[in-house]
Image 1: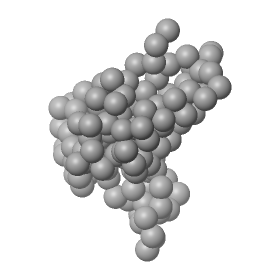
Image 2: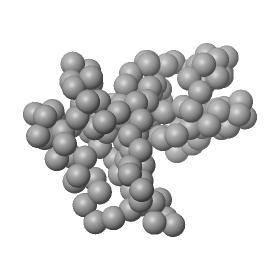
Image 3: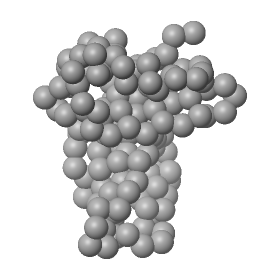
Image 4: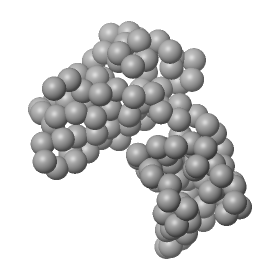
Amino acid sequence: MADKVRRVEYYYVPVPDRPGEGLKVLSTLKNAGVLLLAIHAFPTGGGRAQLDLVPEDAKKFTQAAQGAGLTLTGPKRAFLITGDDRVGATAEHGKKLADAKINITALTALGAGSGRYGMIVWVAPADYEKAAAALGA
């Protein structure tokens, strides 16, 4: 089966880089019934961290986040790719972008079990449409 490449919107939330701070955000969204397609969290320095959140339903997500007083930045855009796991799956998509002369800003990929994998790919905003064409999104 061919991989599925989706254009997605994501938002990010700054949080203190301390135990339980990301959990507060995720619990708020869980309690509001928000389904997240992907989460990417990392420290940004100075005792801060950033949560990148890709919601299934952006309207429901933003309403829940704003209702909880979360500071959102976005929407921003990325690509969510899923498919049957195989050797070199991520490299195939990386080659499409490299051949189109598009730099990958960031990428996170993982095996999802049961023979499936997923990845999220970020490119510069100026390259987004060109990347969508290269990836077939």
